[in-house]
Length: 124
Length: 180
Image (cartoon, rainbow over all chains, first blue to last red; front, side, top):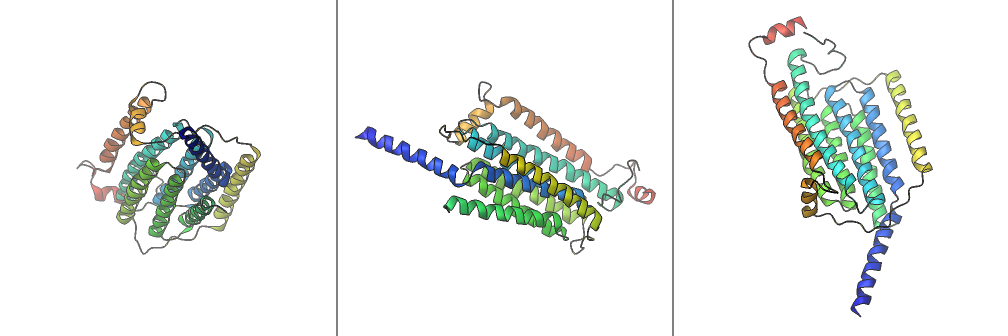
């Protein structure tokens, strides 16, 4: 009696897992991440303000994170590689933003602008 | 349509719409706010996939940390009321062509490849497992990347302090501006 209940529970769980994977296929996540990545690339190419370029960069990193998480969930659900990789990507993005903003503030002090086209001297 | 699909399409609509606004908005503070919406909806996607810890990290670190840092630096460096000049049509046209072509090629190759979803039972992620994996050196252990990331964070912290520190008396402030 108990065995049957356990079996039914396991089958239901499996069904739920399948339903979730059948509801939203992996391709949807990958397409969403690809669109977001190329929107970030567009912003990176057209923007002139350093801070908005940094924001486009954050968009690109975030789309890569979505890819990692979706791959981990759908293709290797018994492992944790994508999960930890996206954690490390978030940490790298945080340190990158901190250093980039320090550099931007320093540039603003020297040139009183953060427009990339006006900051064209390497040495003062 | 299942509830999952509805949630997914809602989140992806917010993500795509707000990312486009992030890269095209002409007021910088609004662009930062749209970026915040994008990051919060990606945290919603992680919640949907049952990665609660990652979603919490995304909310606190990305939405709470990086966006606030960006807004602070906007307040320090820009005029809030100032609008950007519109991007020249040639530049915007060529960038749009490049990114649409890239997205097209990527999506075609994604649809071409047949991913076979794994049938193994999903591992339940709790804090115990995350902590043990981060500090373990055996199989499924991530001690080395963890140590590397700690050194990176320390280096970034020291670098940010050294770079953003005011220059000493050797380089007078007014003189450098006059030269530049």
